[in-house]
Amino acid sequence: MTTTDVRPSGLRRLLESGGLIAVAIVVMNMSTYGFQMVAARLVGPEEYGSIASLLAIQLVSSVLQLGLQATAARRIAAAPDDVAEVEHGILRLGWRAAGALTLVLLALSPLISHLLHLQSLYPALLLAVGALPMNVQGAQCGILQGERRWGALALVYLAAGVPRLAIGAIALSVRATEGAGMAAVALGWIAPCAVGWWFLSRGRHARPRRGGRSVAQRQLATEVAHSSLALLGFFALSNIDIVMSRHILTPHGSGLYAGGLILTKAVLFLPQFVSIVAFPAMSTPAERRTVMLRALGMVAVVGAGSLVGSVVLADVAMVFVGGSDYDPIRSRLWQFAALGMLLAALQLLVYSVLARQSRRSAWFIWAAVIVMGLVGWWRISSMAELLALATATDAVLFVVLFGMSLWTMRADSTESPSVGGVVPTAPGADTHV
Image: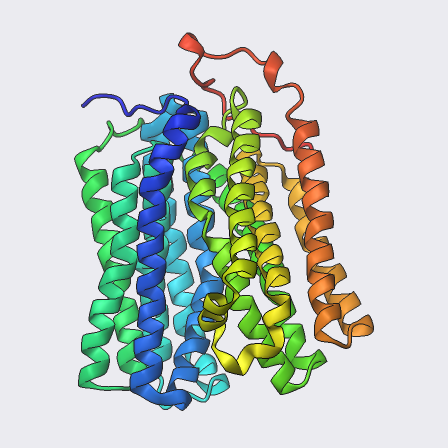
């Protein structure tokens, strides 16, 4: 089999492959949103609340999926000569980690069912079952991302969204219950896992030698743990304000704030393809600085367009966030869009941190979460103050991570490139800052 092309792509290829991934992600997110709309309409508010709560738990458990993906992509991009060893090791670790998480969720299913007031134990059990293919798929996506097989990765993303919508519509039409909804979610995760397996089986590398596998597994597990912790910090930072709003604001005010955050999350996820496509290049010392700056520029362009659109197309934006019931936040739409723009830039820097394995930098994310939580609980009493706190915290964290990224990458230009100016074979992990 021919060796996978993992050479630097340049800005032009970044844009071309980014467009492919962008379309796939948009379709995936629209399908996921479509499933939620179908579920909300068919099962009614009471049972949909249970489904939404279970999906929130699934979102938290997905940090393992993202950690596996980031680790696989970084390892393969930074050391392309070791693709066979990394692929074997990350898939092996993916199955083990996914299996362990599934067992934990199965053990916790009675508690989850009790806390969420589910009608039966089955939805919680289905949540646990779905965690297995969901996290294995993360390892598969990381391999495809690291090898820059964008077409295959795009198809995996499509399979992660469209089947869930189709299966969910059928299942909920037959039986409109929370159990049917979670069964559709669990079955929906099998499709991307199967697509990922098919592509990897077609491009299987030679099986690595047995020597050193245990060491590689320990190293991979440690890196996955650190990556998952950093990503969990970003998830906490981007969602702590809505949690605080339930305690700081009135129920009506909290609902208005949640409506504004719909626009924030849309602006956050719109340039998500940039992080996915840029991540392998940011894992190599020879090109990480240039690619990070160009990627930030692309995120800024998309964010600026969204910011202008929230002002010029305010009527359209209001339909998107919930309609006339949310008119009190019309004048603040641009602020919610600006918050989303900051979060999108932060997300890219977080992946830059993961690409460099800058473990100390990751703790600044959790420090921002703690500061925001403490200030919010003791000093904030209005929507304007909460929105300002979230924006200021994200802005300060961006400046800190951006400055530290430039500082730690200052010596990249002096590192010796590999043959042909491609990428060095050493991982190039930065564990000092």
